[in-house]
Image: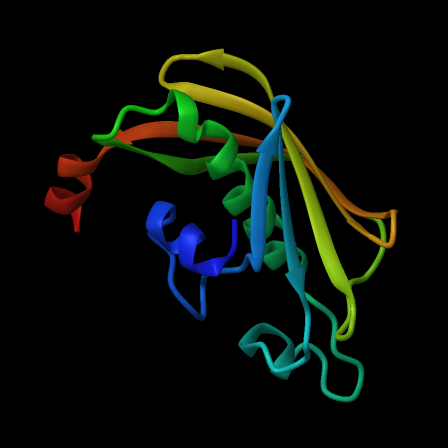
Amino acid sequence: MQVDDIEKFLPHRKPMLLLDSASVENGVARGKLHITGDEWFVQGHFPGAPVVPGVILCEILAQTTAFLLADGVPENKTPFLVGLDSVRLKRSVVPGETFESECKVERVKEPFYFTNCAGYVDGKLCVKARLFFALVDKDAQKKDA
């Protein structure tokens, strides 16, 4: 699935859409984002030695996970990231690299989904984390806005 297809599913748009491609196979969601160095989040992080911020890596994991939850989520619900746990940043991600994410559901306790995620560059672990999602009613989102 490429960006045009991703936009049909995720509510995110550039500059917050952080996936170039995504897929789900055998209960594992995978996403890719090539870091060019032109992204807003590396412009000042850090001048002369740009690095993708860890929170952005976690957002990429979260966007990837949304595809994993797509099959089981009713049309009137949106998966919202509600928590992060056990986040470990193992290696920096820099311009010129392609970040690849991989996410799996660990367990479900409606309306919550607990996932395990990891991100890699060239097969080397950059970040791992447990992410928690809640299914939120789309009508309630509009009322809260």
